[in-house]
Length: 175
Image 1 (tube, rainbow, N blue to C red):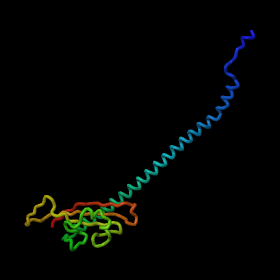
Image 2: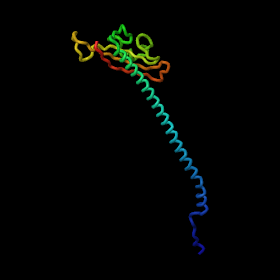
Image 3: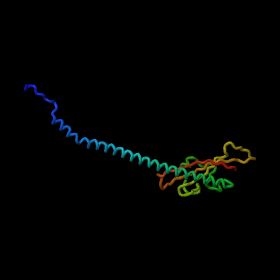
Image 4: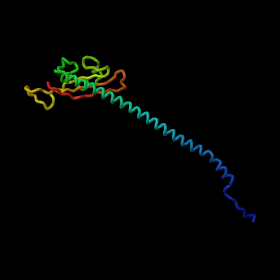
């Protein structure tokens, strides 16, 4: 009977050592969760910074757009009040063909001088005659409707990172 000893393959001492070695797994899992939450926090922070920059750029864009539009509307109001739109009498009104679209886009064309009318140091307007308005009669006995392009512009040369805005408004007046 001595040969019939039962041998267990698992040593109970080894099993207890394995269980004891699991004591640090909670710490490892907690650290993994902490790293995961930190990565989520960093991602959210970066996304928020981008959203703040987008909102700031949109605010600058709208500010430039609405200020340029206000300048163009001020020019239209002035032209409405004038009896005659003679370019010689009003230096901000340019005759047909004297100003090109490249001039309007060029920063050097918009200094604060007699070429344009400046509202403040950064906002200007100019009116360019387009000729006889489309669809009107060229009959000499009738009043002719003249067409103008009014450009309003907002640009701060001292702070070019604030962008620029140029608005074109159509205007018609009987001559």
